Length: 177
Image (cartoon, rainbow, N blue to C red; front, side):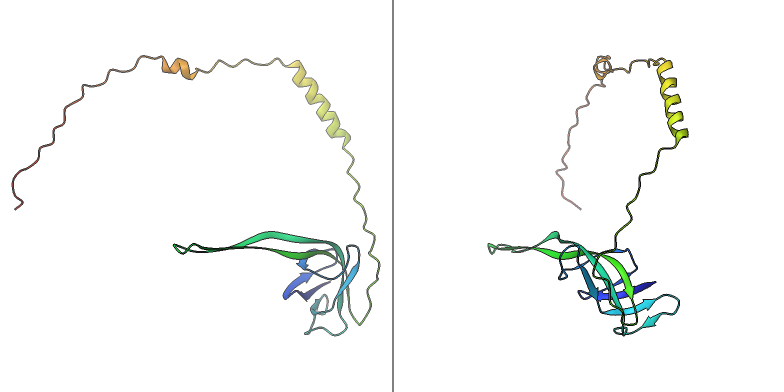
C-alpha cells in the first residue's frame, strides 16, 4: 500500500518504512505526527481525493536538521555596492509508520524496529583465506629489473643541433598596388 501526501507545499509518494526529508514539522524526535493531506491511497483499489476522506498517514519524527547554506550575493559593478545573504532551510527527517484509512487513529508510540543481526562469516570463506595466506608465505618475491632513473636518461649525449640559419626580414619599400 502507498499514499501520496502533501506537506510543506510539496507532494510525496510514501509507503510504510520510507524515510523522507520534508519541510519543518512540529514535534519532537521520537514523536508520532499525523499527515492529514492525503491526495491518493493506492493499493488493490486506489482512492483519489483532495484530501481523501478518512485517510491519514502516521510518521515518526527522527530528527530536525538544517540544509546546506545557500548564499545570495548581489554586486553592481563600478558602484561599490555588494550584498551578501545566507540562508539555510530547516527540514524534518521522518519515517512513515502506517497508512490509515476509514478514519482510524494512529498509535501514539513508535513501532519497535527489528535490529539487523550481522551475518556470520562463512566457514568456507575463512578456510579459503587461511589457504591464501599460507600460499603467499611460501612464494618468494620476484625481483623486477630496475627502471632507468631520470638522471641516467639525462646523461645521454645530446644530438648535435643543426646550425641556426639567419633569418632576415626583407621589407618591401614599394607602394601597394
